[in-house]
Length: 149
Image (tube, rainbow, N blue to C red; front, side, top):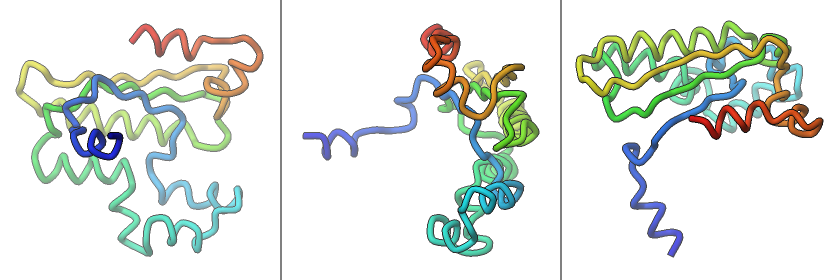
């Protein structure tokens, strides 16, 4: 049954990860969250208050893991961080910092199967072009590149 199969899943089952236009660092995104109607009360209900939010912050998690272990797990799959240069919702620098943190954390690994981390900037994309506007207008660049991985 589906409940049993969920419990058998493990991180090493992942063959790759593509992160697209995500808010990788919550403290930098508070203003944007508020602008879109996600006030502190909503964030607190999702992630807890204060320092608890660091537990769910992707950038902080990578930085903390890298500091604690001198590198991230060799079980990580190849990672792609894709972002649109014209994204007005999540600033490009958030994606760049996240990709750099992943690259730094994996650089310390000495195993031959070190995961590859790649940052791709799409010059014409906004926040949702690759996954929404593009496909709706017949542009399947995102899906084509995803299928090639």
